[in-house]
Image (cartoon, rainbow, N blue to C red; front, side, top):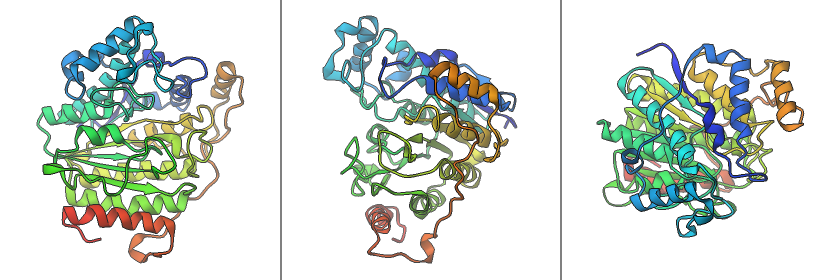
Length: 390
């Protein structure tokens, strides 16, 4: 495989714009790419602009009538059909919506293809990770489900075991739904508890059906969970599942909305803990996936200046085997770009000043602790179905 990671990027992805005031501000993508360039990471990766996903690719996951509805709303936003989740508060219709959504999906699909072919071991599309879109509808700021499309393409190419790890604060419901009955895809989602956050799914008891029973794993975290609990939960579930499943490809979704400053959710995770999980996913790809095959995607994240660009720049650096020092001072040129685009001051360093640590599950658990109760619920619901001990 190539020694260089691929970064999927086309400036046109910043056209994924639901309008003024919408939380999914495309400036987060432009600022992330700007920070990647400011640290010179674009010279440590192969920057690739892939073609938009075509009709046949989109229909690997999405129904034809839904794709047609997106096309119609894209051509005339006033004609958006809310029966498909289009033209709603969460997913306003906008001109060109189909084209830019297909472009983002195309980047994730091309990343999966490159990793499967052996062109590269690691590929990143931080514009992707739009995990809420359903086969027949838009949801949660997501029009086309690029993670599911990337996985479906891997299956089409012959993959027999794909693991999907989703650490966005919201449940990865659309990806889970796409492979609910498919034992070839292991979906693992860590997210804020559905009692307190959209989309109100992702309970531990959601484990798949039929041949896919045991192929969906959900860890619902109590609101307020911080670094120690988040990392403890991640390491109490993910590595054991991957060691057992031995995926041919690892696909990960790194929504930055777990951060304590995110305005749409209620976890209290630091940038440094997010970076720790990214490093672990990289290690897991090398330890458990064939040839270290790793497709890393973005996702949610609505602290668009202080958090998202730093988080995903760390992701690119880790995938490139050129990690950015958390203590690194952010170049003044990028902070100037932040001010020019947003009239806000940019962060100064690539760290929140935290030193994440956690107690390993193997050291024992407290049945009265809410975090440990959440981990236990997941292990008890899903692990026996995979022949693993709780």
